[in-house]
Amino acid sequence: MQRTLGYDPSLTWTVIDIRESPITGLADVLISINKQAPQHIYLAPGVEMAVIGEMIPFGANPFAPARQKLRAADGPARGPKTPVIEIVEFSDLECPHCKAAAPIVEKLIADFPQARVTFQQFPLPATLHPWAMKAAKYADCAGKANPEAFWRYIDNVFENQGSIALVTADDKLQQLATAAGLDAAALAACASSPETEARVNKSLQLGQSLDVNETPTVFINGRRVKGIANIPYDQLKALVQFEIDRAGK
Image 1 (cartoon, rainbow, N blue to C red):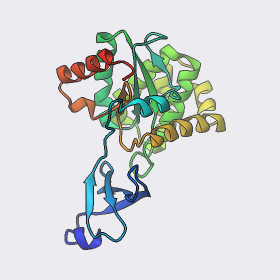
Image 2 (image 1 turned 120 degrees about the vertical axis):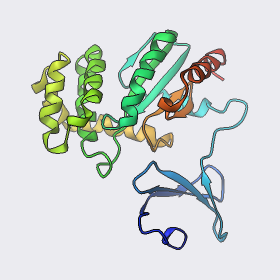
Image 3 (image 1 turned 30 degrees about the vertical axis):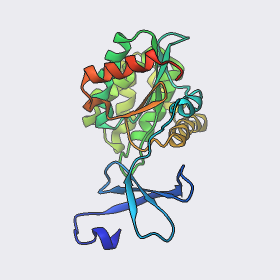
Image 4 (image 1 turned 45 degrees about the vertical axis):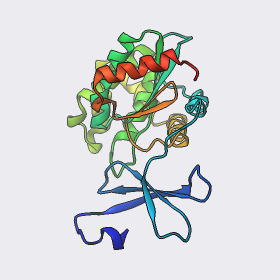
């Protein structure tokens, strides 16, 4: 990295992980440049070349493995108990892109009542989003206390992202809980418990097992969709309908 990018002093990079890739013989190096969304560099031992990009599922039923893993998604959900397809969103309450995605997910819920949407906590590291983990714990507790109020609560947090800072996060998150009709004191006590931390970490681990490394990441019938706020809505609707027409495949 130093030999390739070191000419530009404005560039910094962090190696987030080094692991085996799904293709035998290739290592998967996950890096972030200037604290931006992580990207993959694929390397083979002894070969002084690299491939930058993303592997995609491929085959006759490419999204089945992801759907199998997503059966463990247990966050707050809206939609029928026996949906045609599942939409699972991994989100970070401090993430501005997640805020932009929220009304789009709402519109999908309205336009596709046969789909069920599940919200999974995925706070990014504190080096990127300092109060995201704290907000995730409060939101997890909101979902346990009152599933309907949960949706009002995360809308409140998204709406007030700009006024929340780490040093005042507890007070602000409690104010927003009260505004959503929740018991702020009970929520704060719940948010500080080891059980809540374990639930949030479980959600993080589920996302990591699916190679989620940026937010929001949405799975539609197991198909990964990144940056839904940047996709023309008609195109997004067509994608959802395509998956409904091929439910289970």
